[in-house]
Length: 119
Image (cartoon, rainbow, N blue to C red; front, side):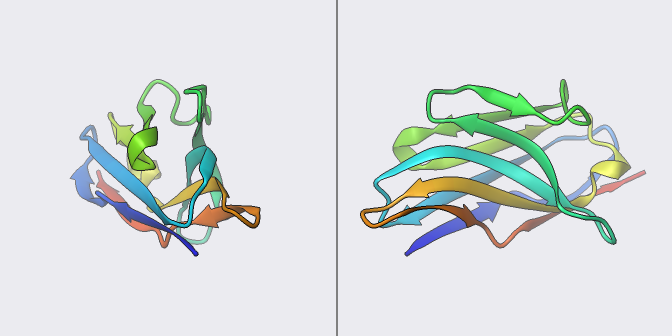
């Protein structure tokens, strides 16, 4: 059993910053990639960013230059530093990880953390 637990969401004014964290725990052999998705009210879940086990990163165009993903492999933790936040960044942010256990490899998701950016 694997769990992803996010933290760090909250309310911030436009132009402000927030840092999200997500820690994976359980019977983990390795984690191939970790990343973030988000879902705004009335919209589909969308991709935000990913980081591989070797540190390669990818970002959605909408957050490029403002958000930075990083990872601590020893702690099975991924971080999302969000700067210059905009009201359109308001969403529930979900942590995602490609996890390998003794028996299988699969996609794991966190429960989500709310980020609200006021104008």
